[in-house]
Length: 217
Ligand code: AP5
Image (cartoon, rainbow, N blue to C red):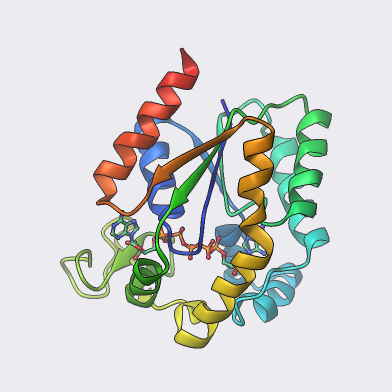
């Protein structure tokens, strides 16, 4: 079973994906995490992607689609959660073609609905482990030992460049112009599921899990 988790930046896609991986054994494909890994490893793709990411802009489609293709070709038989891809209509069309080519299906496109004021609060307080990508928040979820990640035992814990105020503004604009139209697209093809993401993590997760289990029956 393959599902897409989409929604505005900071709507909780990464947080909910981590729960789905742990509880239901999905494999997480996050294009944001993949690009950050390339940046961390100093690859050419990472260098190109960083120029766009730090500003809150989308990395060009051809780089993004080629990266996802490489990943899927190697492990098409797994159950995937796609997080942050596709992110515009051109990517959604390329994604459909790729799935057809690899004889894979997309079962549900789950939209996390979160109001903009909550998003800004979540993004500006987010902190992330540089080593493993585990996600924290300064208001309610930080490691017990300062700077030491509870997931991988290392760190450091840092603020993403694109979680600073100017980049957040750009990301919200980019989201409205590019990604928001996907909601209508997935509604038209009967895959859209809307989940109220403005609740605590466990509540949002229960709703997502229940949708997935209904779909499986
Ligand atoms: P990406 O990493 O995908 O960023 P994003 O979509 O903007 O999403 P975020 O990671 O910011 O948020 P999230 O929804 O995962 O929220 P999270 O769970 O962390 O992409 C980054 C960049 O990479 C893009 O701007 C672009 O440049 C590039 N890129 C990536 N994919 C691309 C593509 N397909 N095409 C082109 N370019 C691409 O939660 C946020 C915070 O809220 C955390 O602190 C968390 O603890 C907290 N939180 C989460 N859930 C809750 C809750 N229920 N209640 C309270 N707090 C919560």
